[in-house]
Image (cartoon, rainbow, N blue to C red; front, side, top):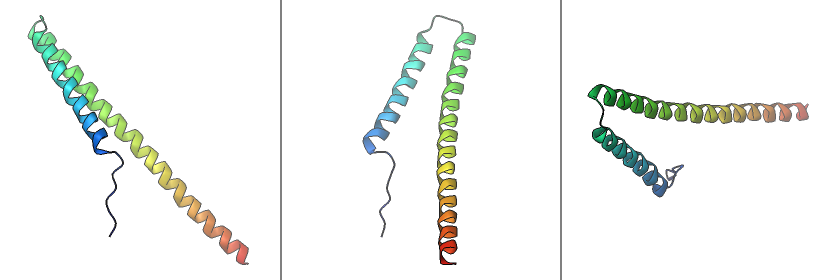
Length: 90
């Protein structure tokens, strides 16, 4: 039975989530202690949430495009190898 292999080590996953949570906490603390009206705090909060969600989306799109490119290249390499074998047999 094949064992499931993860791309990232548990330490790297912990580092990524730890950094995300730490900076989220720092942002919230900064917004709470900011001496501005609630409207300004809300604007900064919305901008921060939008930036974080956009960063996740861009990272996913880049990763997916890279995986699709690799899969596409593998598919056509297999077709080329199959074509070369048929040509050499004739």
